[in-house]
Amino acid sequence: MPGDVMGQVFRQLFDSIDEGVIVTDPEWKIIFYNSEMAGLEALVSEHVVGKYLNEVYDAVTLESSEHLRVVLTREPVLEKRKSYFTNKGKEVTIVANTFPVIEDNQVVAVYSVCKDITKFKELLTKTMQLHDQIGLEGQEHRSVNGTRYTFESIVSASSAMQNLIVSAKKAALADGFILVFGETGTGKELLVQGIHNHSVRKHEPFVAINCAAIPETLLESILFGTTKGAFTGAVESKGLFQQAGDGTLFLDELNCMSIALQAKLLRVMQEKMVRRVGGTMEIPVRCRVISSTNVDPWELVSKGSLRKDLFYRLAVMTLFIPPLKDRKEDIEALIQYFLNRYQRIYGLDKVQIGAELKDRFLRYLWPGNVRELEHIVESAMNMLDGRKVITVDHLPHYLRAKFLSQDGTFSEFYKMGSSTLAHVLREVEKQVLWEALKSHSGNITKAAESIGIARQNLQYRMKKFGMHNS
Ligand SMILES: Nc1ncnc2c1ncn2[C@@H]1O[C@H](COP(=O)(O)OP(=O)(O)OP(=O)(O)O)[C@@H](O)[C@H]1O
Ligand SMILES: [Mg+2]
Image 1 (cartoon, protein in one colour):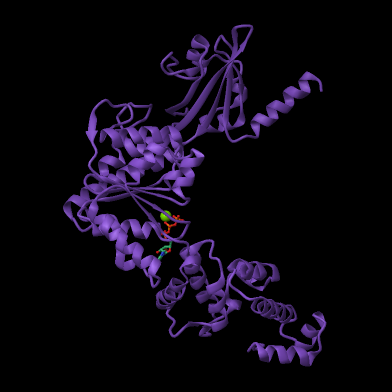
Image 2 (spheres, helix red, strand yellow):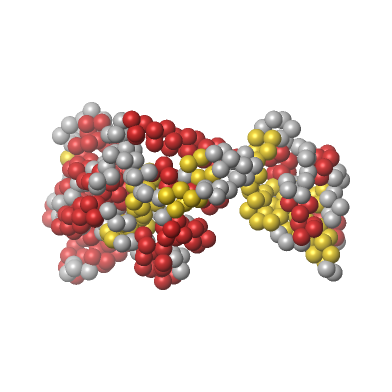
């Protein structure tokens, strides 16, 4: 392919990506500037390309410009956070990675790839302000500690959950660091808040952060705080360790924290001191740390995505919340709890779950655990249309399809492992009948025809299984 075509391809390619790209030559003249960068800085590519950096940006110094530095040092500058004002007066914050291009031992070009994190920074500042406020309010009104749940909020009937709550209460009072693990939607947040509210720290703040929801570069500032000028635009802010004070800091989804930040966290845990980003002062850490993972932490350690030494620090006590499918007694109790709750909210009463559906719920594997069950009960309430009994017809589409599909049903029974062949065959037969009736809108003659049996035969089987064609 001729060079100019390739040039065109690359230009177009770089204009279609979400990251800003700027390339300069060794004299610091801008030779490429993509559309994302232009959007970010409110500039026009054609006005910028061919100009020197100091003609486009104010105060270009070795300190402020990575391009200048990289030409001189030949070393890349990574993850550099910068905040500045565009010529339209808008403040933008970016994270830039800047690299030299070296040929015959000479720097022939320097390029930066920049990510716009303005929104995240605004969010960070707001979060920090909010936490500061909550912290202050917490001092004044000691009952406001930032939690919604206690152990009483945990609905449970299974011995597994009841034993867990007994252990969690002991752990709450023992005051060591705790690691909670359980699949998504099993109630980790509930349990952790329960622990805080059962501990001697209950009048102190409860501060939670989801490590998966915050970009890596900001997580460090949020946890440890920043000093003014730590990076351009940085404000003086308390980190969450400090905001949690004598309370609890909940590090949710710890498994999503990078290994590099895990190392910094470990240092804080060992020294019981935290230093703000850009600061030198050591601030004592007094809070109790509770963390959570949605995967088996030992597995994470053996895979190398959770540092072993950090794991031992944070998991003085581990609590495992079993998935809902392994505590079937809780399913009934939770159904009743969510039925009561949502019928109150939707102004309904005496709503029940049909026996057939309840039976299926008890056999379903609940990949989304309690959250999925809650969501299903709530959405079924919306579909009831004045009826009092929730049936498979009121379920969200994905679940209905699953319940009605032969495949899904078979694998569910198969996985159960406890069924006899006769039971499995009976259940599969029921599913086939249901499906045939459904797809022929309840017309028995057509449904029977579609599965190759006589009308009377279908009627007989429906009667045998107690199926009503409504
Ligand atoms: N035992 C329970 N009793 C009552 N409600 C529960 C129970 N377990 C979970 N819930 C409810 O289910 C939803 C999910 O719970 P929670 O947010 O604590 O789960 P999680 O394990 O933190 O999930 P994720 O890993 O996705 O963050 C919440 O609305 C919570 O109130
Ligand atoms: Mg959670």
